Image (cartoon, rainbow, N blue to C red; front, top):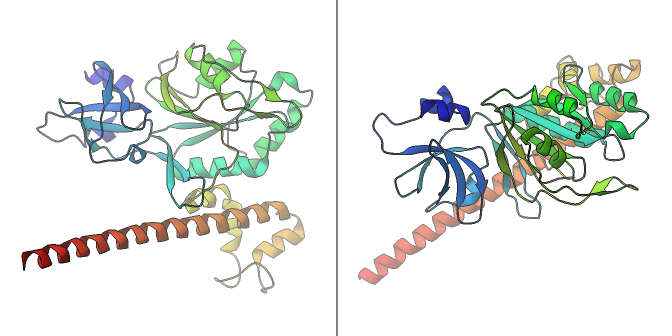
Length: 342
């Protein structure tokens, strides 16, 4: 049983969370539906139910403990979690994937390549504790692959950048090499960049793929839900629906890692509360003047920080309102019972 669980990604991190004496069984979530989940365990796939909990509390890749009736009784602490602020006006967190070792950030060598969006993906990876690897697809469809590769590498000189044709077996092998047996990777990127084609190559499956509009490189959503699938080399891959908008929240640590050069400069300013605008002795202004720091990079840093702070505050406010409303309901019900007992 232990060997099978290790094959699914089980490690000491999860084993130490098991109660000493229990009849609960560990499962790893592979798909999430509205009222149930599909999970993988020592005896194969199993449908699990979540009494008293919302399916939104779980992510594909999570480890849970279930009883003999296949009811989920516990969610084990995660090693990593990818999340974003959900779309819409209501401040909610959307879980993307859990316990991911490697995040494949996928973009294509065409109009989809967008520096600001790629940096958001990288900040998300750093904040989650996943190792980012950039994959440039459709390398066979451009005559200027070098410029795309240089622009991607300029985002982080230490980040692996792979230029691939997603239908080429040798290129697929280069991608697979970043995921060892028992490890888990996730694919993140826009629709139409070839994530499903990559997943097909990595797993040997034949999921449907979609065409893209060549005028703006936009594709239609082929993957509509997240699924944990076994790779041919024994690793695991989570394909995610395409997303053009990634709204960060509570990702300040990831942003600091991504922009460590600016963070370092800010620490050298004369004043600790320097706004990097008109203050004397500003190291960031000096770096701009000398050409060490590009103005557009500073602008992207400021924009990401402002958005992260704004989204984080709104979500915190939403949580506070929820707690206050719950307390109001509890007090109201308690008063009603007192009046009824008189």
